[in-house]
Structures are given as structure tokens and as C-alpha cells.
Length: 129
Image (cartoon, rainbow, N blue to C red; front, side):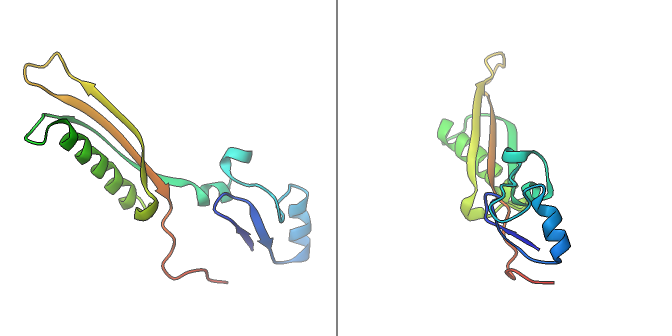
């Protein structure tokens, strides 16, 4: 069993001594860093990765104007990230792009928004198996 902090830093390892010794050869031990940013794609990095959601929509300004369109796009991106498994409390907008569509006969804007957050923790807490 391996326990890491949210950044992929190994806090503890337990199990068969032969397996733990073999893990030390690849720094799979206390103090080892296993985020994808540190060593590339791996199971620990995938488990701690952020979850995202996005929206890419054409909006026509309504009564609320520009701010209402952006607010809606931000909310939809946030909701998509949460639907994908992100923790609602820690999910934030990480990208927002607004592109006026001047070639249309009526005012329109293409808005792309992306939200991301950490994977929502299982409500039951940690379980040992």
C-alpha cells in the first residue's frame, strides 16, 4: 500500500518487504515524487490528476449583456467539471476565451471556458483492504 499527499509525494508504504525493497530501486518509497509533472504518466499521477469540464458556445447578448454570457459560460464549465468528478469546492476556471463573431448579421460571441479541480474524494474516507 502506498499513501501520498495530494501532490504525489509518497508519505508511507506498507506491505510485503520484498515488494517494498523492489520499489526503492525506482524511488517508490517515502519521499518519492510521483506526480505526472515530476516523472510522466503513472498510476499515482493519474489518481491525483485534476478533473476538468469545458464549454464552447455561441452566445447572443441578452438583457444581462456581456457579463451574463461570461457568467453562464463559467457556470456551465464548472458544472461539467463537477459532473466529471471534480470537487465542487475546489473547482475553478482555468481558461476563458471570448471571440466576437463580427461576420454575423446579429451580435454574437463565441465563448470558451474551462474549469478544473481535484477529483472529489470518496465520501466513505480511506479503507484498508
